[in-house]
Image (cartoon, rainbow, N blue to C red; front, side, top):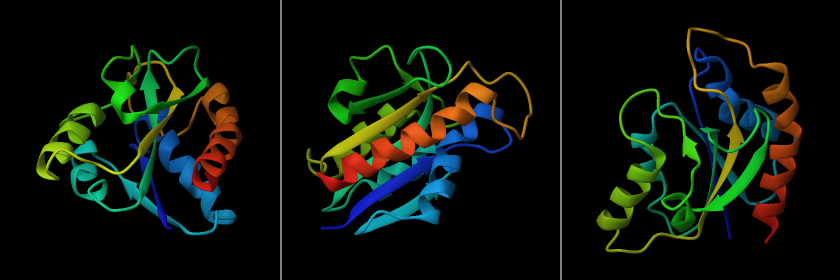
Length: 149
């Protein structure tokens, strides 16, 4: 069974690009049976999560703890969590997943969110902060664990 791993973020928004940085690292040694996808806007998730395969979304999140903290949530828990994946424009991850669920007739494949805590983006930046950069290896291990089960 293929697992779709989706990295979400904006590289020019500093720490918001961490989801894409995690995918960069996963490309160096991809887990078996994994399809890697990159998106810059949560609206792109609507189509990508409507699949018969398991989905793992990797994204920056505000409220997930101190910057660099890595948390895993399932899609259903996202709505009830204080964690807010960052949306620099358009719809949020939670809204995209809810829309995808409606369009898919009320059912989505098992979906996990790997949330890397950041401070809210404030300005144009192309570098990750040290704490968030250090979290990449942790997030990669979490993705490997999620794609094995």
